[in-house]
Length: 412
Image (tube, rainbow, N blue to C red):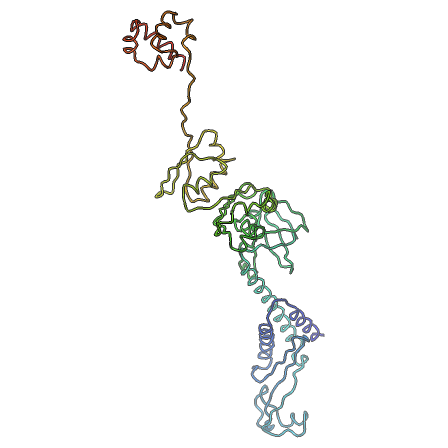
């Protein structure tokens, strides 16, 4: 019965995927040899034949025939009288090879061997999962939502391996139910309490990068390079792209005809607003592009402090800052510069006022006097000094000052 159980464990080992043949043979032999060493004091004179394809094994013991009175080593020697029971032709000095049956081990030894083998299977499986996912860090994987907890989601891959999507690596508007299909990037892999812990992420910039690689063939082929990705997951993102082929518009290629390429990415990221920006080594131009959709008037760059002052029209300031400061924050992260936004002071062109408009406050003869020297509007009068007006008209300086006061009050 114990032999059957042992064979079941062996068969389970045989079914393991992604375990190479030499590793499998080595582990199985190690387990059997450690059991033999405990049982007989040494495993040196034993041959172990393992048939991986059939899922069974044989153990053969090699012993030297000695005279009955010279018999001292139970493991390596066999008395002549015992050898003759196997075959009457055996002589002293010859080697006897006989098969060791599992029943010879005893129930406890078989149980220990089975437990040892099971432990090694689990250990190998864990190591295999760890190695497999260590090589897949930064790759997108598709899994099935198996269990939803408050702080994380348990996801199963195609092989039934357990992966974890923590709450802080989920987009705020992500809502999953058991059985849903989920896409995420492998963020990190670590061993915790001797168990492989595979952490997934949907908020990592790498996730967006990989989605663009899947949707945009030019990126996958290396014709367009993603220089940097910055995200406020589920809200807004900026991605800087560069083309090595002058014939390819990197922004147009990423967006696609009528947004066909970018729409799939936006949907996957829960309607995250994505700005695709043409990368350039010209700092001022790159910052200008990074602040889109706002239109920048001028920029002052302090290279030493990595600080930038950006000047825009008053109507563009809110666009540059964005909802909750999202646009300026992402532009700073993308360019690597701290950005301050300023309204550019605009000189308001004030409307001029015709002199006749002042007829209720200024006497008509004074207005005529001013018109005679070519001053038809209030501004034309204010442009001349009191002395100049007194010299060119018959008006008293006191009258001129009063007229100027009335006209100045019109523009206050």
